[in-house]
Length: 149
Image (cartoon, rainbow, N blue to C red; front, side):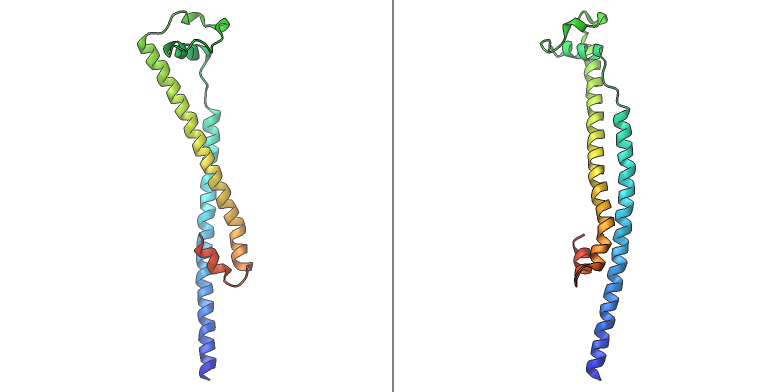
């Protein structure tokens, strides 16, 4: 009788542990699902930011090269008429700032886009395969999958 009660208590305890782990698994599933949704939204913003990027025109590029005294890599057959002389120091500062802001915009959008694509991939794979691996795996796979997250 005592051994039967002991086995019954072990069985109830195992059921309670599995129920608690199932709740934790559903919480992690919901968290990864919201992470995937947020990442997908931010990927869309990143693509839009890159699509709205306006590269500098020929006059700005030529003025920046004159400011930096770079004249050996430019096609002189297409020199803009308004830039026959080098810009002033204020003009050079403006062209440099415009170029810096444009480059920072592209780098920021590119990094945000790539990081969110990675996050979207990882969270989507976790949402799709995680519960199945935890529930249909071998003995102890539920606790292993929860401890590795």
